[in-house]
Image (cartoon, rainbow, N blue to C red; front, side, top):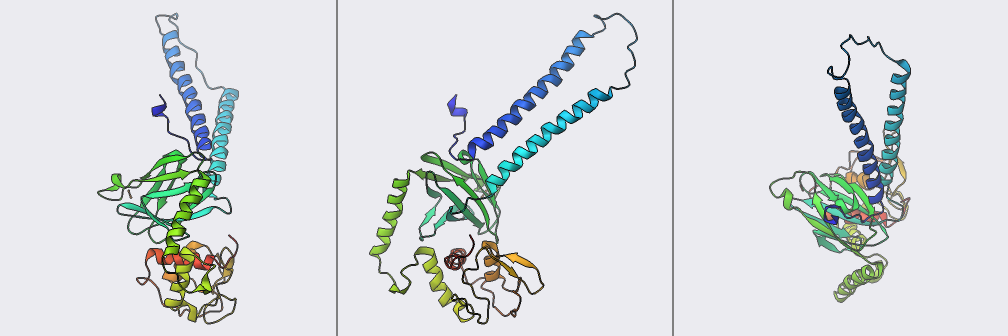
Length: 324
Ligand code: CUA
């Protein structure tokens, strides 16, 4: 019997299941009342069982009709309120969640951690810590689906979408692609490996030790590591540093210190908040949104940066703080 029950391995899983079971049970009860009620009347008032006479003409019963309408409305609004509450919880990652960048492509998943670790078709996460996935696609639409966590999110080229979960049980849980994406869509499988916190630390440490064996760069940016450090190198190499200050000074372009999560006013007076999608667009399509007081003169980085390099630049800018 347990083979038919989906494992429940995240903090949100029981919430999603509770609403599902509520819908299943209340709809089952409504179905039974309607079907058995009809059958009862069919049987009870069959003309072989009642005296042959013309039935009275029924014109309606306002109190009953209004009562049913009110009860059904309360039931539906209750479901709406419940669904909305859970939906908001599912969409809003708790502050301080560990971030992992996930890229879908035909036909595999790639995970990139802030420290530079790269995994294919596998995600390793600790128990009891919220994890936020920032996802994009290299080609077509995909969808990241972890049934055991009851989370699913479309993965779309050229923008970031996100999803969060907090695993509650050790183990390995399958990841499916839930959006038809070509021939090998059904083979686009991955797994989430959930480890006890100390096992996760050991796993992360093993990677760091491996990295230390390799010759490291100059010591000046020792506080940065992994992706942010790659971002720093790219920031210099791609020439960003010529126009953008990270010390709060206004040069040719807007300064980038502590801007993440804040709001900025554009040339047309519109206000936008600086998130991953805004930074991504500003790198790849610099003229799409021009900050008030600046000229549209930044060249596009489109075609010059790989997906993971865009991620590294954004991680570097985020490392200078701001409102997360
Ligand atoms: Cu990727 Cu279906």
